[in-house]
Length: 137
Image (cartoon, rainbow, N blue to C red; front, side):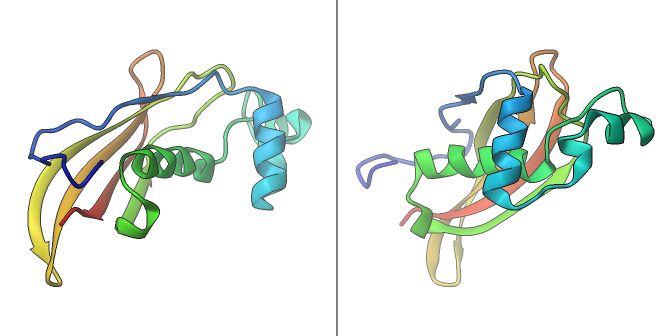
């Protein structure tokens, strides 16, 4: 987003298409985030918990949403960022993160856009939804 760009309700952010989730991605995210929950890295642990295999950290999905937002606007413009986890992101899921401007309003003396966010896999299953408030004025 540049200062020259006109932001309007209904505008879609450029989508972020990610490679399929694999074990290496989960190990690296666990190390980078400090989240070493074995359900995300140990297949034996995951199976004992009733899962077919390890699966992605919810916060990895939220991080992807953050990447979409900060490709569109500088991080310093982010005023609020929430997510709701709606499904498990399994190995092999290729996630596309999308965002859409749903409102523009004055918030605390600043012109801001509300952005609806979603992480969807290649089968159309929504894994995480979210909302962000971004200063645009």
